[in-house]
Length: 171
Image (tube, rainbow, N blue to C red; front, top):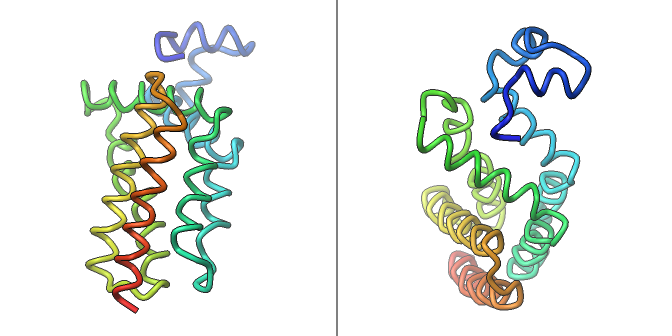
């Protein structure tokens, strides 16, 4: 998808590139919107948003549950597209300005809110959320390049255990 022009995309869906420009403004905006829709349809965001909200749930189990949904085999095409767009955005930030603007906040903000509900002070919750997202995205890259899913899961589970201990220290 990333190497297709708006003209080619328009023809593929029985429309024109001008219609796509009208609705999306640019190819990059269309790709960003497609990523959002893919996340919504794949239930990754739904899994997260309906996920670690229960303050009585075990932190370790909730983090691992969300990771299992995000790293599921059927999510791999979405993960690869996401990583391609990240690479393109880093190469030419002006073309993917909105995508880059939203990127640091999406998952980190949701994790921070969850951690605050678990009793972690706001500043510490933000730092811990950034750490969780950084490892999650790094491990998603490892999955995309073909590393062992079992090994990657072990790494995340071990990290989730340490994060849960840190959360517990704030209670």
